[in-house]
Length: 355
Length: 234
Image (tube, rainbow over all chains, first blue to last red):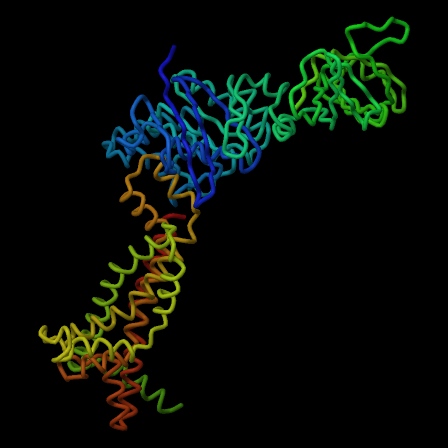
């Protein structure tokens, strides 16, 4: 098992009297690509700033690269680099900006030039070297920001929503390039994002934060299908988040939807105080009336209200017993549907996630 | 209107003819106000930087004092500095009263809050995360502060110009602590007041124009150097 690059134990940080971060334990190992997601104000940026030793923590222990953070903050910070949402360039050329971290380390001039040109080439922006950094387009600026962060070859790269303002195509290209660079250089990356597509494209481990605490951790697929809270479910793009009531009597569990109009027998233990029933859109299957119902599946009838085309998967909005459901169906199934058509569809109760 | 025009012509003539007394007064004015401005920059810029970059209880109170200090009446400053430097004052043993150093002290007291206040505004107008970005790129605290000063240089240059403009044109403090002694503490403003007192308005106007020309010259040099840098950067 690789060594922990970041090891946090009982870290608590405050802004004034207000607690902004409370992490009982968090480890990130060398070479890991980790995403941090959460709603606004969840403490994602605060976490990065604490890791980068830009924000002090009041209690707890933080080790970076196996060393206590308080022992050598400058030395440890120089093994990391952080890219913020804004480009934060100084006045001057792209070359001058990318050279900045190297000059801070008193690197000899010929080596600075060599490193700057190499890192600019890595991000395909050698041609920008003599352009004014403050006049770059959004995509160019982000490439230069990444080049500047990587100029000093950090072991740990911290990304604080750096691609938030970019168009989807540019984001995708940059993430693919960055992932390649990170894997080649065996760099550890902690990536804060609001965009779940970015997270899925970039990392294999997600840390979910809410109110300054880690509320969920795992594979992105797990977080999408089994979110820890309503806020995370919304952030993850959960197709159906339905208010529900729960009943548990003589060993049988039931979920009541739509003020009790729809009842689901639930074969799994009901969590305490669950208020929402999450149904991912891709758990639904179209059913044929002529075929008998599968006793292991829940079968519902509904009316098609809207059909939203997509690549490969269509989103079909269906009304059933006053509930509005979003179904994700294969193109060949969805294309045959008509608005106001009555349809039958089914799903497995095990796919339901209660929060 | 005629007398203003005559005053202007006399000012040009005095400067063109190389009048030694006028040049002596001009030189002393530049030395005294230049040194006072330099001291104020040394005190005011780091203070403004510190104030802009740190959050602490009482910051608003300190800031209100700085802002109040930006409008300190020179006569009041002159009176307080006089009381300090007077023979029986706490600093009387230094024997600085009625010397150019006394004027420098008084002018530095006037210019420091101006430069500190405008430096605070210049640094405060920078993107707040810029400091964090410098630190995260591996800058030491000193390197970070220097980079912030470089980024805010246009605003800081304006602070310096405002500070210099404020002290080169003040008369109350210079008169009180300098005494307008010919060949020793006579500066352009005190000489102008003296000529008015004597009823010699043409000379007073001439000295006023010399003062304006000198002040404009210094500010123009700073402005051109500021714009030159901006064009280099652009």
